[in-house]
Image (cartoon, rainbow, N blue to C red; front, side):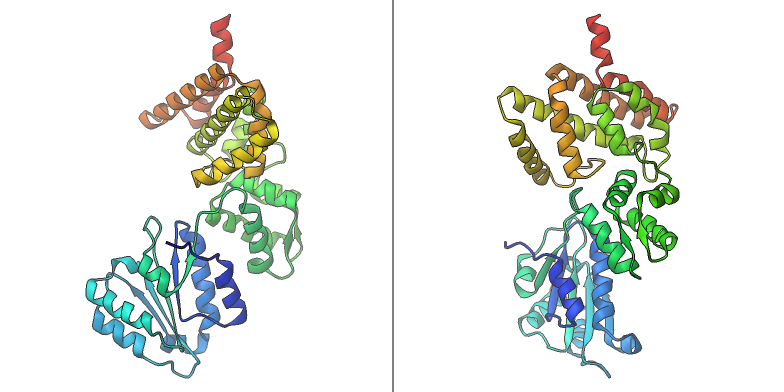
Length: 355
């Protein structure tokens, strides 16, 4: 099955106002999918005639007769109509047959957008009869570009954001686009059409340079338990940060360090480690790294010569026990649980055993 095209194809149609007869939106990033769908409908349909020329249907609820009528209705006082069918894979057999027949000879004055929810495998039949747009989850490497795009196009008014501010925001909020959007909207109001800088992110989001999740993970990668412990409380006070998300990021980092450490022992050159680890991340999908992929890879490769196989095994064992403890009881706070596990993750447990 051929892959879907990039979302740039839909954005180009929005910008030009020239749409294909039918699009098929699928993939696991429901947030971006929803935002791009809204943008497309706003661009395609005049708000003054929207009540007459826009149909929003749900696949499981529509029958063949009503769908045929909707698709055959011409636009009223406008150049096109738009028909959105959400959860298209849930359509009944007869309704789906009506849709397939229409897609074989679509109308030039009707824009059909089919939407599939996350977790649903794309359908070959729809991929070949529409312009398929894949919405894969944004990786850590693409988040800064999304932040910049959102500031310049959605906040608008001449607003921009510095590279350092985008990095600081990502490190404090993570890769949750809805949370990033909320913080960016506040920052846009704060900047009043100007440039969003690191000082503004610190003031509005409540995070300081040098005390981000990325800084915390770097301290653990350096096996500096004291430095990691010193910033633990401030990290946990940041948006969308908890023991769960921190354990996820620590787990991904420890596995990556272990992988790089084993590759070093096999004689792999550090420069090759970097490209290979990037490739591994891409193959793994949406791994929560706690900061951009570039910083994650650089930190893991740099730290791999400080870790042994025993260090990695001890750290993973400690993280697994902490995850189990988190599920079993809430008697300890997130801070207490992480404060107890960090010395072991950084290697203090092995040093005590050796002593």
